[in-house]
Image: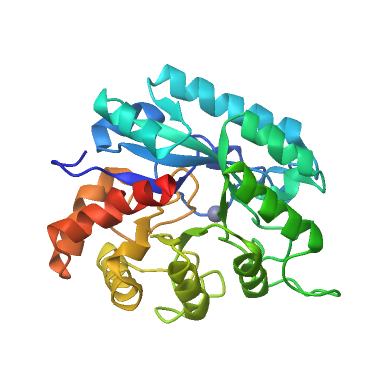
Length: 319
Ligand SMILES: [Zn+2]
């Protein structure tokens, strides 16, 4: 809690992740937020994703072993830090009632699944409750918005969700695994919205009417996600010339999105322990109090801040 406000983050990674990227991501990444500091920075809970794609961490296709190792690392780091691992909004509520921070497990990049639908069932058994379909490489599910160099890969075939991707989305719906469309190409997102029977999340993004950045969700698709009961996660990340330059710019971006899509559509998705660079003045959850101040300054009321910082995400997880 920050004051008496709950704080939940829809997208994060395990500390130490960036320093483990082979070759590094370049630049000077923000400081880590170790799980043990959640209390100190006022974080009640977050969704922590393992990385399942070959572009960043060399996870091979159909390489569920690599993902299982990462999940085990998160569980042991959480246990060491007295952070609970939960599987539902109720779990988050129960942890908060006992005064303990909590995390939910996710996978970013379905590459690790290959074309094996059973692998998703296995991930569910391991506690995974969110699946980011795409990351930085094309996979059997669909096409991405851009690769690590910021380039939208040229494709011989069609863009969008593959027929395997459709089956995977439907299975995720059945298993109660949330589908995250961040990093997906517009056509892929459109296809996911066509076939998903459940609301989806775009957990860490901005919108293109704020800035024309291919990695951001298009306004048309953001609208469709929100109309379907889904959420848009506000991402304070900077990638080269893209993203909010300062924490005040980030607050303006959140206000812009609130105006277009309503405060009920937004959540925080800071990508801490995974963001290569942030808006100046924001270092991660340690600066959430400052972010709250900036949002008040641009006109957010108390109940609107409550919504963006936690209650929207809990409501979405409950539904
Ligand atoms: Zn990401």
